Image (cartoon, rainbow, N blue to C red):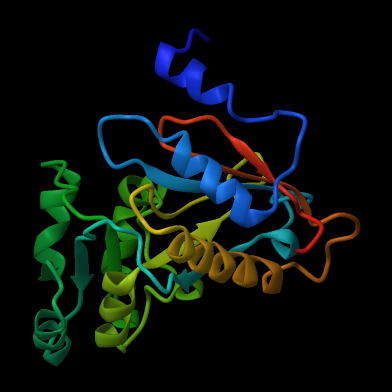
Length: 229
């Protein structure tokens, strides 16, 4: 894969054979984020889990103390008083069954997170084929299926992110923007890693965290020392 001149120059600053301490890795990622936009800082965690086994699945959510730097649009499926509660809490879109054809037929997906009250999951379930592949399906483990819609919306707007294994047993999550101060990125990274460490499946034998890589959207990957986790 051919890389641009900026990437090539940035990559020269990273020692591929080295694993860095988190603070040093973050500093390097910020230094090598040279795109003309405010790049997202991402964490990629390769695990020793086998997601084909239910008892080794990892899925959850954590509120980053300093947010993600992104404005998140929230869609809430609810009915009755919960509709008003969701609107008052700052949901961007609120509705029920009437939204199904808009999403299914019109391809409307102008939202980043979907929250649903438990009594609406029968309706939302009909959108599984649309929302599922995009990682938008509400899930109790992620706190997006709940009667406490106010808390769910507040957490999401404050910087709540969801983590889960992909098909390669890797977790990919954002922890902020390259414009964030080093300390804020470190705090977000620490909050994420605390949650990931606690989420270790009890059924897993052997090494849990095989590698951790920090990168910006367009920058080179920087390997992080896994020993402290």
